[in-house]
Length: 285
Image (cartoon, rainbow, N blue to C red; front, side, top):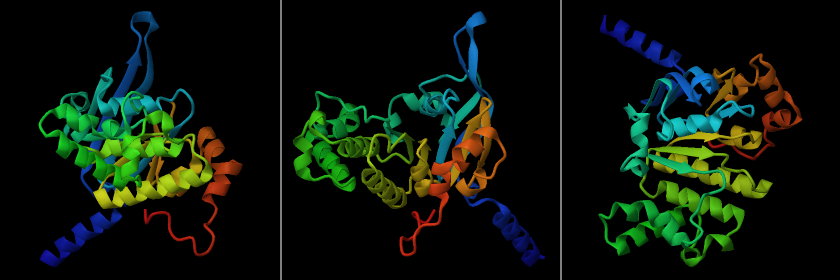
């Protein structure tokens, strides 16, 4: 009898998609994102549902105006749901924007959003220094560790943002997002503005950090190469909701005008083409 019960549990677990077998990190239920008021009010999202699970790398795609970045802002707690709820790490999303938020959620903004008047070291150290609980020497040491983690050298610490290449800005911003060791990392167009080699290098870095730090990653991207290189799952925003989720290959077959245009165009077919022999897997996802 016990063997039968065990088999039933194992069978149910095996039938569950891999991304749904872990802890639920983000739970979005019947979300309405409403802007304006009265007769001028309009909803970007209506009854949007989405679950994100520990350890996955979820990419959010959608056409212009579908609210991709708005959804990230809801997860960050920077927006209040008009209706519905957003739960992040078991707490209401609105609490993510409060004290200690950087220890729960890290954010990499599209253009880095570095403080132009701060050095690289001070940019990375800023969230930790703001806590005011650690001596400056320890904060600086932690920032240097994070810079090394993203592939930068100690001599880069004294540079100013204006002296950095686009790829280095991304790495500094990533180091800052990770300074508090958050379990959840949000990325807004992480490879935008990078050349193909820089994009490939940054994707390789993200894969490495995802595995090393046991991160859950949520990424908005329109870049198909980045999407296929990193994503364990894709969520498509259309018609004011999450239209479909699944592996990139499965979502690409979904019958909808935006999905077909996005995935089945020339760039999409090229991104989905089998990798050349000997190139290795895309991060084991």
